[in-house]
Length: 186
Image (cartoon, rainbow, N blue to C red; front, side):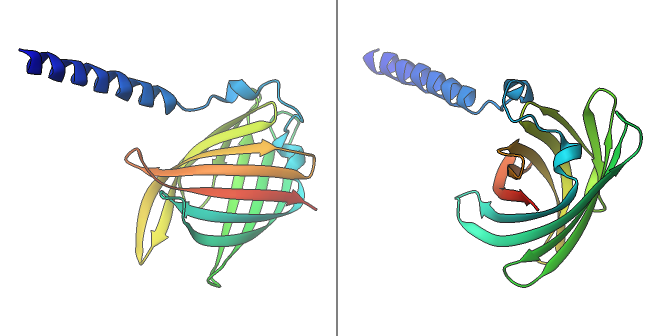
């Protein structure tokens, strides 16, 4: 009887601890950044030429790839419904190169839809305060195979010239790694 009571108590404690851990894993909300300054306007920040420096870390935190990016960006269209092109040239630490061209569409409500050749479907995003968040599925080539992985991508404007970016990459809800970037506007 005492053993059964002890096991029941341990099980209850384990469930409570698990619930606390899940609560700690709750995702952030873009609305939490609404009052943060400086205020981000993607159309202003991603306009002109930018340099970015980044790393990809695996789920243990080990850096598995370093890279630089040169971005040439511009916007056209009437106010409130602009279209942006972010032309990215990546150079990886192993010498390989990659190009990605994002085409962004801004809606009247301030949300964004993005497309690129290696994005499955569309990326959906929104900005509040100093932050921008978007989610998308990327076709990622690895060792001769292509995997579709999900990105939860967050950008934070630090100054009018510097933005930090942290993206979590997952597959079937399992975290595979993170991409961390620092953008500098020329």
